[in-house]
Image (cartoon, rainbow, N blue to C red):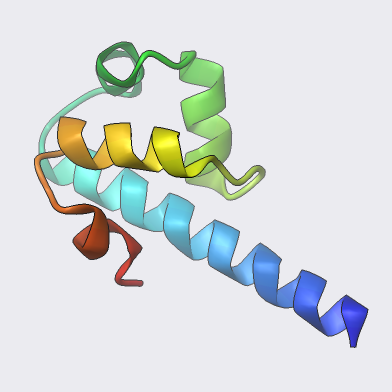
Length: 77
């Protein structure tokens, strides 16, 4: 069971990253610009978008604010 839960976490992390990338591109914002607005490094934002790493709730909150969407909408995968 533990392995399935871990696999599911990877899927969620990837989907969340894809949503961030989609929203960023639709807003016509570069990774560097969004990272600056959120106060994270561009490489960390890139890792989030690629689904390589997950993020904290506080970073997700700042991402939603920078992308001008609600936190609920951000997590609606």
